[in-house]
Image 1 (cartoon, rainbow, N blue to C red):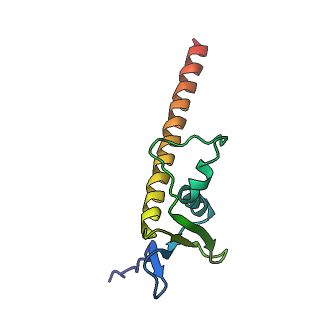
Image 2: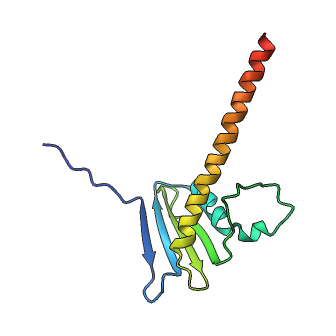
Image 3: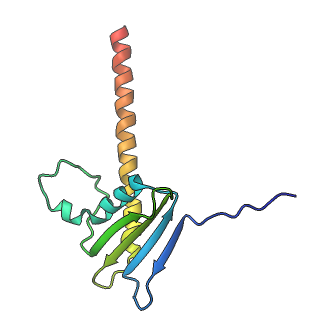
Length: 133
């Protein structure tokens, strides 16, 4: 009859034995450099935020996370769409906390960019209509 399709998990957490949750590797399936680098930036932006000459203006909901000691990712193999995303924290903070905050803030930034884009498209169309009249 109908075959059951086994669904792969989208996210797996791998924690080394003997660690207290401050050093975790998250395995993200069906993702690539676009997502990995964006998420890494959102988590590690605490050092970038200190640069007052940065041209990037982030929404007010985006904060800095100085408790993150290391954050990086690697692509397992070019033929696989899987990322190993590692976070190491200090000060007793669990690695899952900056990971969740990074995901939330990445969504906030994407929503901000989308709203600015849509407003610009609307403005452009209104301008074009005014020129046609």
